[in-house]
Amino acid sequence: MGNPRPKPERLADKLREIRLALGFSQTMMLKQLEKEERMHYGRISEYEGGKREPTLMMILQYARVAGVHIEDIVDDELDLPEKLPGNVRYQGLKRKSASRTRRQ
Image (spheres, rainbow, N blue to C red):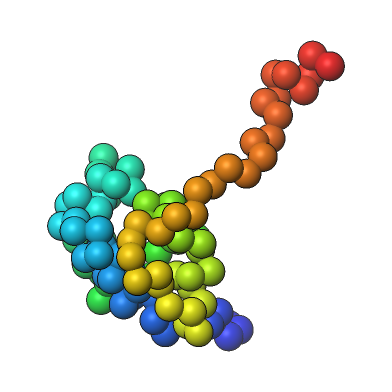
């Protein structure tokens, strides 16, 4: 069946560290991640306990809530900043909307 992809060993600990540093309960974290309508707060516990690995998009949401680079979360050789939220602000270029592109 092939080899499973490698998983960051510190991911679960970092996700828990983010939540606690921000002072959020699991329910509050779910709300900050904008998933409270689609997910049970128990999923946060599964992520933090290493029982389930979050999707890439979920890790991106964690990074945005925490104000850190996604690499800070997934790279086992990097530590999270001492103070959260960090100072990373996402100002990437937005792609042009499909309707605007068609008119040109």
